Amino acid sequence: MAHVPYLDRSLALVPEHGRVRAHIRGERIFVPVGDHRPAVERLYRRLARTEIGVRLDEAVASAGLSYTGLSIRSQRTRWASCSASGAMSFNWRLLLAPERVLDYVVWHEVCHLEVPNHSPRFWALLESRLPSFKEPHAWLRRHGATLVI
Image (cartoon, rainbow, N blue to C red; front, side):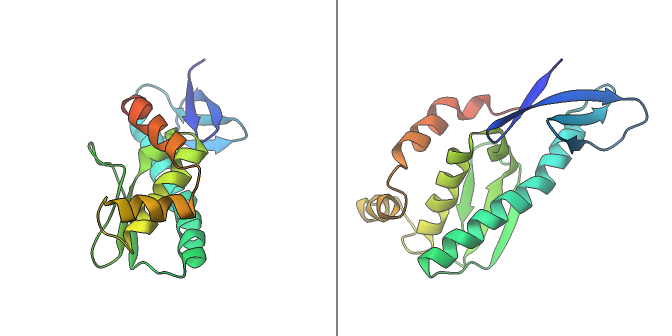
């Protein structure tokens, strides 16, 4: 039986005839028979809005900041971005990574609300907010290309 990662879990894919949408129940994802990838991507996009939204709201509140919007995308070369106006964009594939990696990317973007570049000041701010950032940062650089369904 095939499995897909979902944060720190591994979910079994269970094909069902007549199903058009993917649905998580327990440790299983019920998917359409045949190519399940489009249905799983749609499911992960919906779940990403919630998973990322909760973490983003907590992080900006903790930092005393705010953002203007959240979008979930399928970028090929970026995990997330923060615009000058405070609009946040995150890649749904982050749900395929360990939870600590998602948390790192959220904090990375929150820090961009204050420092919009990757200067030493930015990295010092990130380390003050998430002292353990180096390990998930390295994990994403090493394993990011493997985050596919």
